[in-house]
Length: 328
Image (tube, rainbow, N blue to C red; front, side):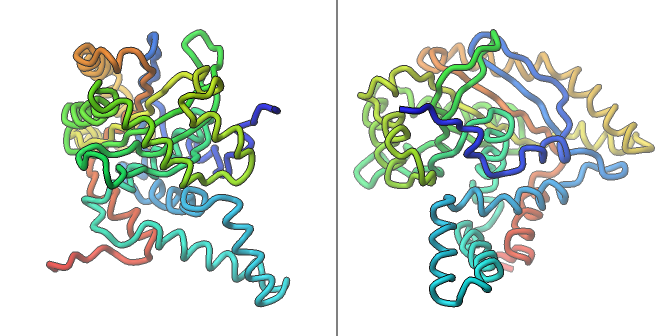
């Protein structure tokens, strides 16, 4: 069996990271990696507009497999002729992708964090998402939910070598860093807890197979999602974790900066001064979870100035309108 080149399966433009984000620090220690990003400055502000627009453009790749897109194109070809395939399929794929997100209140909808995590994992870790967020099966415990995306690929270890991996993501967007980290570990612990691990692991991958979004190389993908298979056993488990949170430090820098360059320099200085604290919070937390210590954790830390603005901006770019709640 030929080994899949996972990076070739990735359809999004990985250069979006360089266009939209500044990396402030990156550190790997044994099984824990921590990266800290913020959006690039817009004048003397950090705005979510450009980032949200770029993420919205990725929704067709997030929502639909290439096989599904080809099926849509073939249906249009059969119904409307070759000359209309490009125009009509683009419209229909866009509509289906928007419908996938629905019009739930963005302040409570977890898909916005999941979309950002998808973009980061595929672009930075080079691993391909093969299934979306998986909800628990009907006969499984209601409080236990599936990962925020299942990915496959080759993960780069601390020594620079790569190893086959399956990745189960977790995304948290909250008001504070500590709260986001706490919630992330609580979610991961539900996956690894002895009383739920076996049922959750098998349920997770059973559902993943039913919702797989990669149309080719199905046999190898199934083997890599089958816990009893030797190919599965040769993989390491990685949890990519998005920690997106509010901090007044960004606003303080915005108030002090005179230019975009100065703003980005001030933010880097602030975040580097917080680097040890950010990492210590994670390291301290992981000590309380023996099972989580046994797998790999890859954190994407996103300090921001207004998470509600980010969510609502992304909603607007997806649906073309501002969100209006039923109570408004």
